Image 1 (cartoon, rainbow, N blue to C red):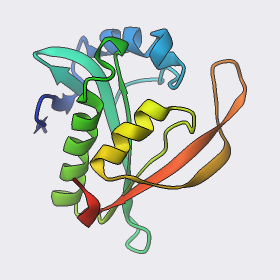
Image 2 (cartoon, helix red, strand yellow):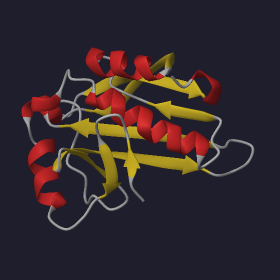
Image 3 (cartoon, helix red, strand yellow):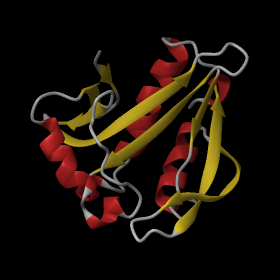
Image 4 (cartoon, helix red, strand yellow):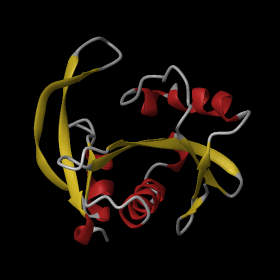
Length: 156
């Protein structure tokens, strides 16, 4: 599977990508919001001009009564603020709606991660509510998360 956005390409993580992704997820600006995963299996590499600049993942609830998909993303700090996160999330969201048939998507940034929240709003995600003490940061302190969702017809 390869998904093409306006500027990014999303493809399965390949040999050599985990080393790059490990470096990215340990950058201070990224590590503030992400912990290094145990592995990158199931993630998609975010590629710009042939270079891996981050990763995105999704999960799916397939129970017909609660069907939905969730998205999570990180990008290297040197590409923050350039619209690439928005392009990545929009590209994956379109695929989840059009090809996987989801009518609702969720994303759950840290409540304090205003840059991520602005990016997700550009795709059409709307705040649902604060999830109190939702995730533990690298110091071990519980932090709030913001649950956001998007209905298929709201996708921009």
